[in-house]
Length: 638
Image (cartoon, rainbow, N blue to C red):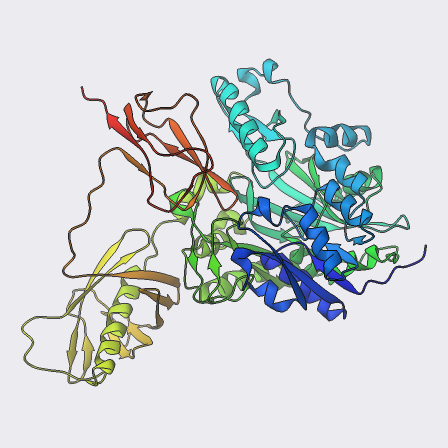
């Protein structure tokens, strides 16, 4: 088979994965083209590409999901190949075929292979015929109490969309309906199916890579069991604690799945492992978000291998052997303690798919970065990753950074005793409790702000006056609502804190404060770095970061919202309202009334009380800002 060298690659994606593909292309000497929607006009992937083409519009449906516009952009820019990344059109057979029909090289599997795995129901039938073990679909009408729990799952797409766990039989009809509606909205396909749900199973997957010469690699396993809303949070390679016999079974099943559809390029076969057995879940016909942990363990560049396969090159007969262990954490702009609510705003300090000054909007996934650590052992890799996350400086929207660190340090994760897909169901409350040194961080903020004010007024950080009748006070509010009141004393010999149990002040500058434990000779000293941006104070200490909003000592009157008001918890788009809901409708407490979509996640807005709906301002398609009034429920009186 002859090879077809590539010269210019268009990356049909954005954010972190676009930058990842661009980096390898540049390393290989390939010219690159980016595409961008209007909100991404100044994004990092646009700046780093050799050329860029605008896709007019804001929403993904009008831009990154427009196959015709992306193909036209590739031809206009003189590209001879298209790399789809992950998400968007990466598993769209029609897009792959349109790229090929335009005379361009598609960096991915053949359209026929994508189609074979596009529907999970058809994929399960194909895998059963190939002898791959799986959990067979169930007839919804035949499910009994003894067969619970079950999982309602969209036949198309992924990322946790169109999925519902059903634990009570009377909840199944509603779950089927809502999952189908969400799947239709997200993927344009409302087909759903039902399968057994194993709540204590592990999510284990196999990275495969095939060429056009008949070689298929199984590049080891990954464990992706720590998930929220069926979306992965922490992944590692190789999957720990698996018997050699089960690991070999997984490799053989994944290879059989790839050969059954003549697969070429990079892909992932996902399994549920429970009670020592592996069951096929689905096959992702693209690069996975978590591919770097496999690269770190096997010493390969999967993007470079994708390009080589697309050019027609042959893979060696055997893949490189594994070495050591790697763990990846997905850093999201979200608040785990508030139902994983996505956060928006300006990134003030961060280096990843985003950079300082970039805006996190409502149109795309909430992932800011992936952080990967390698070590000779699993324990070493986990320790390095936890330390890297703790020391990272992240200023801007709230993130899940603290949750990631606590997850990595949790004994259930470290010892494998609690490593399964129900990890966050069991431990979320303890993992999201406020950090123990929150007050110390607030003390650092108060002292640094006082020094900053003093420096600006030319008083000097150590200046003092003896006319003060009472100690100065500064107040701050953290993202979780905790308020801190800090009293301090500037004096001839430095700063002191009058509160009982407050730490000893070692040093203060406008940008850093060193505090020592009180009540001990000398005391353990800890350094806190302090920055200011966006009207907030950002404190980075030994236990992570804390963002604080100064609270005025003389607050003005706050507008009162009518009781029973349903406010949008985040900016997003109303995708639907409850059937038949209108002003005058009777509602019950906890009843879902409005569904809001933000950052590829769907959020239910529930009735705060039983009563009558007196106002409804939400309608499908309406875009709302955080705090927008969606509806009002007048509570019934006894």
